[in-house]
Length: 264
Image 1 (cartoon, rainbow, N blue to C red):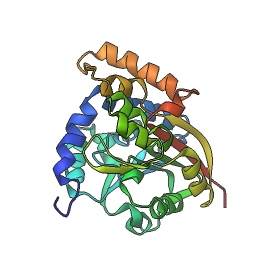
Image 2 (image 1 turned 180 degrees about the vertical axis):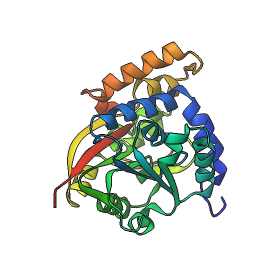
Image 3 (image 1 turned 120 degrees about the vertical axis):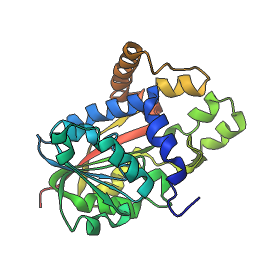
Image 4 (image 1 turned 90 degrees about the horizontal axis):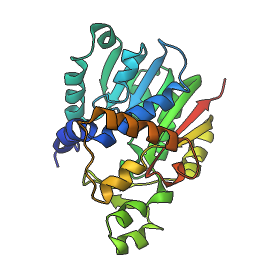
């Protein structure tokens, strides 16, 4: 790979993955989660490792002031292309910043945000602590920190559905795998990430699952039709309900944790 590790994956990630049923489910379900916790517009949102803006641009359209920070020029180029297609008022509410998330505080000049998002990033880092430290630091007093990452407690689900039985057996105690983008990834547990943010002054409020039935269908070989808008919408509503309930959320390959920073 080039110095920009995401350059070779930008098209696949930003264009193909998010155009799929699973991409729609991820964006929709997490948007609904966020709206349960975000303050009213035009509160400020920092999206760390925000990629092409699939999660934070809808917030800009809804009236939030969004700063998207990403270390990949290729992903930021995708974000710029998508930003140009937003309504003018939404475009004015978005700022793009090229920087490493582990230096986010410096990159935003010490600004504090009402919400700090970090979705699908921790799993690509060797250690989550430096990034989590930055996320919690950049949140304002009373602000929320939103983290989405791989669920180590459900690591055996994907290889089992793909009938890779030896891999599935090994996955019960594994923390790493080659992800769907072909890149090595690492998973965490809800309790572990909850403890990390709690140690940094952010109290866990609620956690959710993200993908369940769509994962099971795709990994077992079923084709999901992204062109059937009615079916996709119905799928997303079922996934949203499953994301909030036990035991379904516990079996999701990914979890979404929301915490709130204490008043200083």
